[in-house]
Length: 288
Image (cartoon, rainbow, N blue to C red; front, side, top):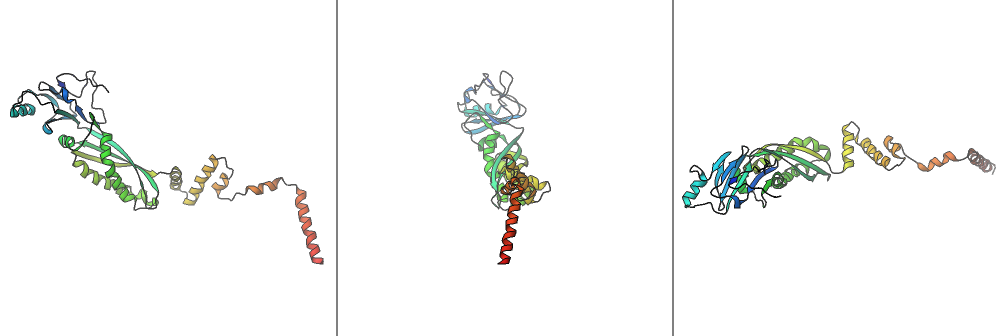
């Protein structure tokens, strides 16, 4: 992606009116070769700008226009303190989004009876301490996005979800929804606070068996069928998709004997001969 940078103006707004701060962007690192002592930093209402010079946070600029040459500007005080005529080359401006963000994290776990489950957790948060976030995360490109933060949160969520699911049976999983949300909320609140992020809420949006057939059986059970009938209906659906005539018998729970169907086409005389032959044999046995 090509960047269009306006000279002397440091901002997340492009010349065409669009912004570098997309809805999923947490931090935008402005190219440092564009930051000079004559630059004007413009911070949008939903942002804070963290200026790092020589590896240390020297200023946190709130929304508004900031002239580096202005005496009230903390960067001007920095240059005066060290008697710099211009900002050092390793001056970096990080624009941090202070709005509400959402990230969805997916993972896998299993129950106590070894049933694999897929889960999804929605996390809602916002940055409250921009310099703390800049100092405690690491990224190589110009952008740090929600998906990058999700990589930090995934191990924490997986540990809390598995700590509960690994101790319950499948039939009890959905009774522990509130316990899962409480455990994940407590762990994330502490973890995010160390990054300067406030946790707004946590919601478990999905918790289902990995096997699609088992999902359908659970759905049938919740509709009022007992487990045996639900399993039979699930197997009947599979047999129907295969074109197997035994699907109806599976659904109603009646045995299916395909070999006996050939007797329907046998001539009636065969039954008479067989029955008659049987009677003669009985008479002979009695006379003997």
